[in-house]
Image 1 (cartoon, one colour):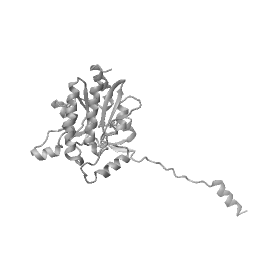
Image 2 (spheres, helix red, strand yellow; image 1 turned 45 degrees about the vertical axis):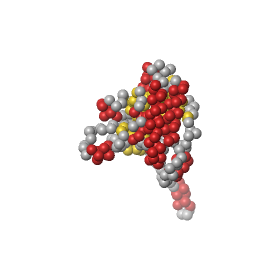
Image 3 (spheres, helix red, strand yellow; image 1 turned 60 degrees about the vertical axis):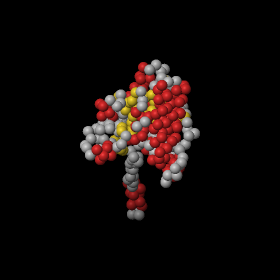
Image 4 (cartoon, helix red, strand yellow; image 1 turned 90 degrees about the horizontal axis):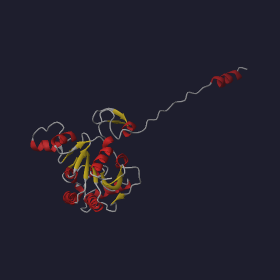
Length: 281
């Protein structure tokens, strides 16, 4: 009897405390660089990549840009047969290109013929994931072909810029694209078509000094860094303290360099209004 009771009691009252594991997704939270708040990643994603606390505009992927700006239709990139190569045998450049190709990122700009609220446009979206959106020979070629197609088909061109400038791995060849793209825009402008630029953070260097600032209408996201040389370089060169907010969208708007600052969630409707005003349907 004594041997049975303990076993019976054990079976009757035995219980197991199960550990509850709370799994937190990797990179579930981000610290906003502007307000320093810790924000749930999905809250940022659901808010067009904008911080819900301070409205800082985070950098977003090209796929996200497509979803925000373009209608929900099947899209086919244009001019993809043109790929970058290591013409100058720059150390490490071939390896970088191979790594990016494995990630299906083939250049610093993707171009589409697409619809914005039913209006047909040609649009180029730069990609900071490809060597900081730098401008090389293929970027220049794709942009030139973009404007030639716009001129031929009588379509408006929209450019979303985000770039660190000319690509050092292609040397003077990359700098030549400033002239090449500017000449293509001049021909496009002379044909009477509309060119709209959307400047995002950052838009700098040779991109700013060429096609980024040649739009008929230039829009910018809030607090975007826009300029040629960086503020630190300028300050060290001129030995003077720069004004507060120097090279930010708000400063450039005040000085007349851009036409309007538009929050990302309002950008599609703003572009639609501009296109309709210019009789694109």
